Every structure is written in C-alpha cells, then in structure tokens.
Image 1 (spheres, rainbow, N blue to C red):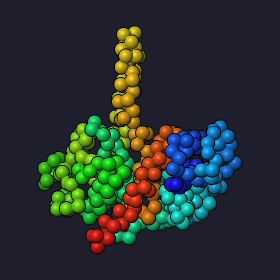
Image 2: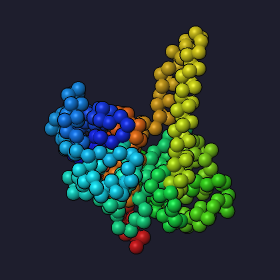
Image 3: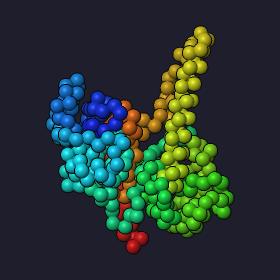
Length: 333
C-alpha cells in the first residue's frame, strides 16, 4: 500500500476538487491509501458526496492554511498546524510515502527541503513536470525551484531526470537535452556554456546536445534540463498555447452546420488527441532529490489532476526513485 498525504486545503478549488480527486484515486487503484489533511468538518462534509473504501482514507485535522501570498519561510515556521506542514511531517516520519499539494508553491518548496529534507549530496532539488509532445512526453527540470542554478546542479538535474524517465515512464536510455537558444555547442549564456561540457562528458546520461524551444513540442529530448527561470517560461508558454489551440479548434468546429457535422465524425479521434496534450493528464511536478516524494500540482488543479498526481506516487514508490537517486549520488562521491 502506498500512503499519500493530500493537502485538502491547498489550491484555488479546494477542498471540493481536492476531495473529489482523492476519492477518484482511491476508486481507481486499490494500492493507494489517502490521508486528507485539512479542516476536518469541511473535508468530511465534502466526503458525504461520494462512495469510497473508508478503510483506505483517513482525515487528519489541520486548522491553519498557508495562503499563496504569504512569505513561505515565515509561514512554514509559524503555521505548524497548517495542512502543508502536517503533510510534510507525515512524509518525514515515514507514515506517508508521498504528499500532493496544489497550495503555495513557495511553501511546498521550502517545506520539502526544510522538513522532508534533501538526499545527502543533492545540491538543489528541482521541480520536474511531465510535458506532452508529438512523440509522447518529456520531463522538464527545473521549472520553478531554482531560478539561479550552477552548472553542476544542471548535471544533477540530468541524472535525476534520467532515473525518473527510465524507471517511472519506462523510456530506456532517455535522451537528455540542454534547453538553449541554439543547437550549436558554443551558443547560450555563461550557465549553458559551462554546463554543456559537463553533460557531454557524463557517461551516466545520454546527452543529445542543445534543444531550442521550438523543438520541445516535437519531442527533441526525453529529459529537458535548464534553470527554473527558463523552465517556468517554457512550461507556461506550452500550457498557454495548448489551451489557446484547444479553444480555437473547438470554436472552429462549432462555427457552421458543416463543421458541426464534421466534428461529430472526428470527435473520438480528436478527443483522444486533445486529451494527450492536456497537462492535467500527467499529474503534478515531483520535487526530485528529497528523502520522500513531494508533488506540486497547479494552484488551479481540478479533480483529474489531483487524482493523477496521487496515482503517479504509486510508480514513484514502487520503482524506488529516491533510493536510486541516493545510490547515484553516492557513486558520484
């Protein structure tokens, strides 16, 4: 059984969508047990709407909520009875294998490092979301944890990302690309120029060189490495373009009688295609390199993303990702 602590109060749509997603995860896979952490009366009121295996769900009361605008370090220190801090402590104690939160990104990042703790030897844990492309998916890291990174940290990102993609996603010998403004080796800023030879000369990874932003949706690499400033821009741009295209396609299909008839004919295939490019389908972003699994989902997450974020914790635990990262770091030392 994989025990997952869920921040029931985090996110724009909490606790309604959070509770719904947790129940859907329970009903979708019997290998998971959920600990819903938040204001108990509110959470239990939401739970009345659903049928689920009560043996595999616990509610843990947390009176406080860390809001998005609060200074994260101060909030983690002062709000010991907040849902995020209580989730972190469940992972730290070993009672839970993972936590999922759509709450304050800053608080999740700080709590992950301060409470759950980094694996010894890991310089900086990166946030690593799965993003869709025409060939399947890629792992983008970092997308939000380390705006200023060093070349040695990008090398660690590449190693951790390769372990994740091979063990969880099932891509053997994943291709690692360095996000840059050109494919030539000499292109880029000081960070990418220094990181390139480190990646190129590392025998533990399958480095394929620089990757330009326009080639990311085409599946140019399985693991995309960059600092969080560039990574967050790439992620948000992909999400925005995806939403815009899906909206335009739907509007075009409904623009005339002929297009509506055509839409009915292609609806099944189109629905599958559009679904594959929805970021909700791939769960949240794990914070790699910690002693336990911490998954951050979008603040606007609906039930489907919460559900998929919980279910992705199963593969992470079963494939022993933290242990494999720890072994890799020990080999470096």
